[in-house]
Amino acid sequence: MSTTSCCSVRSTTPDMWESVIECIVGSQTIAISGHTSPDGDALGSVLGLGQALIGAFPSKRIVLLLADDAPVPRIYRFLPGVERLVPARSYLEAPDLFISVDVPVMERLADSAAVAKRARARVVIDHHPAREEFADAAVRVTSAAATAVLVEELLQAGGWTLTPQIADCLLTGLVTDTGRFQYQNADPSAFACASRLVDAGAQPARIALEVYQSQRIEYLKLESIVMSRIRTVAHGRVAYSYAYASDLTQCGVSADECDGLVDVVRSVLGVEVCLFLKETDSVRAVRGNLRSKGRLDVSGVANRFGGGGHSAAAGFTYEGSIVETLRAALPMLAELVGDDPEDVAVEL
Image (tube, rainbow, N blue to C red; front, top):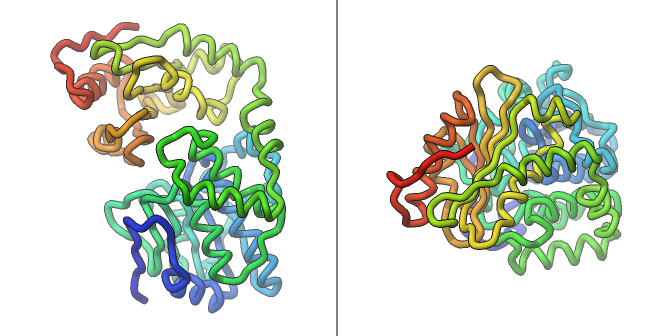
């Protein structure tokens, strides 16, 4: 089967989905998964697509997978259908079809990668650039604001029902990946998709309440620590902050609650790019999140650490301490904004 790859268009066309629809219609058992440590777009896309296919094909066996054994992040547990998610490690079948959503590389599938490898066929639906394709049929549109946008277009192309519950899942993916439509990727196609989802019954007020306005006080205390540590280099054009694993333990916050902390750093006036670091449970491993406010592309910095992402939002994992990670990353970011990397001094 040939691979369909779409990398620069603003939206898809029905013809682009033919191979994907063919795979779905011709399969009796289907497994769908997003990436490890799932965000709103990964979860919303898995749940939205999965429930649409379950409704359209009641005789098919369709399973919705979590790429690892970690619990669903608290702020996304309100999503319709979340109770259907099962850890990939406990799914032992070899499905006819494996559908990967919001995943640029096989490694990001974690436990779901084994399911993908033993599946008869593989489909990718994604908006991240990929080093190499790992599916039989793929629709990858890097200009799409979120994978949820692509899933909504697939449902249109397939003629599959978009219920209010499915619309809630997909709008959550779109809202979170555009930072409430504040990021550079909030283009006309994103707003048009949001309009269709709301028209189908999605509840933007509830999504905003659950995701952004229901933070535990423990998280807010951690957020205040991260705020207090914000520093800038490159004449105020690069900002950074960090959280130790001990901070999370002391505040009583789980790792899955920390996704929004990078936006705290991003909000500093005059900053063009920012970095937030978080110690992981692994020994001497740090997770880095990068953001850009303008046209500067932070994905190249993430790539140099073996990570990746979009021009305005990227991430990586670094084997080292927070200080070592800052010493490696800050000169790159200073150079990115046109400053002298030799003048960067790490301050904790």
